[in-house]
Amino acid sequence: MKLLLRVLFYTVLVYASYQLLAGLMQKKPQLPKVLQDYADNAMQQYLCKAPVSWRIGQLDPAFDLTLEQAEQAAHSAAMQWNQAFGVELFRYDSLDGFAINFAYDERQQQVLQQALLQRNLDRYDTNINQRVAGLQQQSARLQQQQQQFEAQNQQFAADVAAFERKVQQASLDRSALQREQQQLNQRQQQLQQQADNLNTEQQRLQREQQYINDTVADRNALLPQQTTEVAKTEVGLMEIRGKQRVMTIFAYKTLTDLQLTIAHEFGHALGVGHTDNPASVMHAALNTQQSRLTADDIQALKAQCGL
Ligand SMILES: [Zn+2]
Image (cartoon, rainbow, N blue to C red; front, side):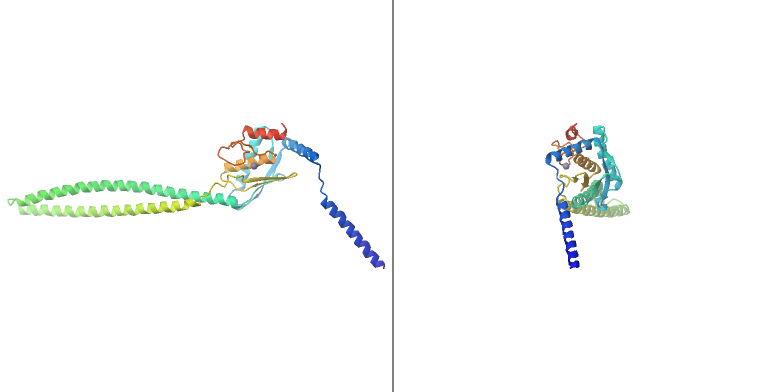
């Protein structure tokens, strides 16, 4: 009986603790909206007054980017904002800064594949251009040699005709005529040899032309692999959960692009949204008009900070 009571007592105790715990877990402290807005505003104003610190987090080796390059790009991006405002909005902190992670997925994979494809196309083009230039030079030389051969051939035909006229004249020295005939025969053999050489060269150049055509076909077969630009959509992500921030970069084509992407995500880190001006860093899509923060970007952050 005593034991039963004790078991019952503990059962009740465990049940009560569980209820209490479950209640605590369900009830997340939820501020009324006005208070939440006030907290967000206070947070935002604090943000623009104290620097947000960052560090490089995970850098997937498949990303094809060194830690130094990643840090350099982020430093340049931070510098853009800091210089535009004349205050330190972003600060490097290898320990406490929020992480800028580089996540490798199909986006960066596609960028790397496209870069490899472009390098192959460039290699084909260099090779083709060199061969075409070489072939043109050799063809011009061959044409010149053919013309010279033609002139020699005509001269030879004239000399043979002259010789045949001499043979008609019975008064001439027979042995002299024989020597002349031997010389003409020798010349004929030389000309034949030249003609053979020219033909061989012409065939070689034709084969080279065919080889170039094949190479062009191989090159052009690569073209369908070219896809539309990956970087048209935002390739970075800024996640803010309370005080926690995480930046993730999914792709970069050039280090300049990377710097722009990080500068864009830095803007989001301070709560700045997208602008309509394509040249501004806070425009939704990365494009060639962007290079540095524009008046629109600066105005957007000023409005965000209540400046
Ligand atoms: Zn964005």
